Amino acid sequence: MENQEVDKNEELEETQTSGETTEQQEEKVEKSALEIAQDKANEINDKYLRLYSEFDNFRKRTAKEKIDIITTANAGVIKEILPIVDDFKRAIAANKEVEDAQSLKDGFELIFNKMYKTLEAKGLKKIEAKGEQFNADIHEALTNIPAPSEDLKGKVVDVVEEGYQLGEKIIRFPKVVVGQ
Image 1 (cartoon, rainbow, N blue to C red):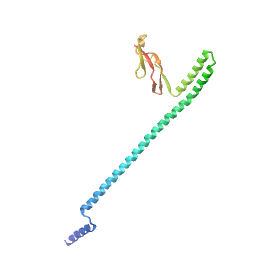
Image 2: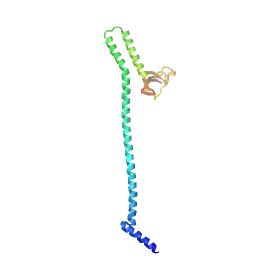
Image 3: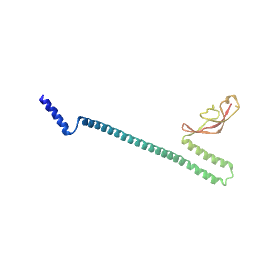
């Protein structure tokens, strides 16, 4: 029994000498838990900010790369069209003194064919519309006329302006006249 009293007294002395009560020790444990939680929250916040910054940099870099790609693509097309512009300049200079209308027609037809082939090489395709069934997703109807024959009802009778697609995307819808 004396040993138990001595142990209690020693514990009491230890707490008194260290100057802390059990409440103070509990506060210390709670503070450390709070500090741990605060550190964890700060770490998560830091990770979030870094991730947000990385994403923002990625978004800006991607936008810049997209602009560069478009600019480069345009430069490629323009570079291939410049010889055709030169052909037009030579044709204009040569046609000042030519009186033969057929040679003028032939010259401009050659230049047109060269230009069209260059555009086709870049993926441009003409949309065939005349005689096709009218489709509002592909054609732009300007007007309806009475069909010249029964088999032309609901079909494209005339094409006012050609339509073109680049790859699979329509870049200009054909403007058509539809038979009713």
